[in-house]
Amino acid sequence: MIETQLARKTTYLLIGLALLFTLGQPARAQDTSEPSGVTIHIVQDGDTLESIAESYGTTIQAIQQANALEDPRDIFVGQRLVIPVSITHIAAPSSQPTIMAGLADTLTALAIRYGTTPEQLGQSNRIVNPARLYAGQTITVPSTNPTGIARLGKNDSFWNIALSANANAVALATINNIANPFAIMPGNILVLPDDTTPSTGSPPYPWDTIVLHPLPLEPGQTGGIRITTSMPGTISATFLSCDLQFMSQETGHTAVFGIDRWTAPGLYPLTIDFQDEAGTTWAYNRDVLIVEGNYPREQIQVSEETGAVLNDAQSVQEEADYIAQKMSGFTPQQYWDGLFLLPVAGVPTSPFGAVRTYKGNEAVSFHTGTDLAIKTGTPFYAPADGIVVDTGWLDIRGYITLIDHGAGVYTGYWHQASIMVKIGDQVTAGQQIGTVGSTGLSTAAHLHWEMRVAGIQVDPMQWVREVFP
Ligand SMILES: [Zn+2]
Image 1 (cartoon, rainbow, N blue to C red):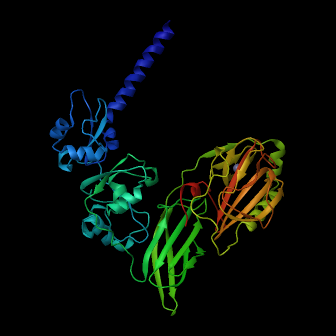
Image 2 (cartoon, helix red, strand yellow):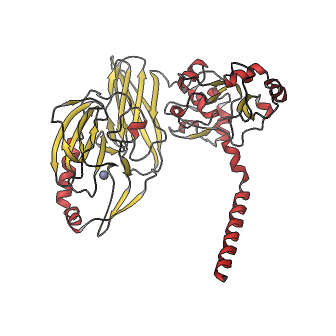
Image 3 (cartoon, rainbow, N blue to C red):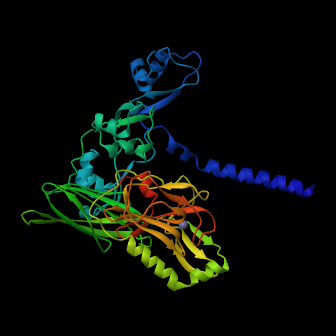
């Protein structure tokens, strides 16, 4: 009894504390409010579109347009109506929008894009030397006054809205607090920026565009570079002490590169050189930010036999060297096109990059692929077009398949139950190449999916979400 009362008192105390902490941070809720420039009205009993329009100082037509209402009487109690209102009618946003500086951005170009001056932008961001702006730098920009809104139709995308409104995509994403433009669905409302002046942030001659993505870069990730130049020529570049291999077609040049999992966060110089057909050369130099990766830690319990194999450093190293050698060439042709497919719809049980400590074997390593758990015998598929460069048996990895996707991109599949392709086979995205198993050093059925870009081990899951180069 006493115990129960004590427990009850403790519970009340905890609830009280929880309330205290909740009340202590009321401002947080504001951050997730609707985008500036629109407000939401919940239709009440007795409301008409006319009365709603009147109370918000707008027109019936504007509300109809914003909500794709054919008939103004077509409203119901409880309905959430988007009301387009002038920015002066609602409170200013609590925090200033920020953007990420791209590889070709300059303070002047950003200032023009966001309707301010380079001095003001420099001052509010405490940028002492504008020449030291780096790719991946977070810049606070003045909020743009929205004047219009657009509602996404069935076949609309973020991109065609940006295009048809002649709006800068970065500005559009910024004022709508959109982190992933691909996640915008039909029916969503976008606030259009007032300043629809396209970016004049093109880099100096002879560079037409220089794009590096994603920003900021992270260890264990792939980076893509897309460059167009004013005339044909050859591109070479150095980043993270590696020479990047470019694929060039006339004035278009692309490259993909891997960032080693153990790269320390910081600013790293990227040097790009261009030589036109007459032999004239130009250089473009910029620091690029690499932030800390967000990787979990895993404690792996291994049996005595497994421990013995893992402790046999020589055999572990031999197999690793074999794989590294097979997955690090450069075929000067890009076989893949667009996003990679997931090779199998397994449960992701262990992500790429997780730091691993083995009990009884204190060696610290990281997980070099992503594990997709699914039952033995499940078919799995090539995620993209490519050429099979190796198949066979390895003591630790079991039955394996290696695919060359061209341009220095390779994928590998371990612990297979069966192999369905042979060396030299051309495979296409979605073609079955084997079945999932638990062969080699594996405790349960799963597909270990691994990727190398320019010889560096990277997270293959990034390629399922992001198009390279
Ligand atoms: Zn694995």
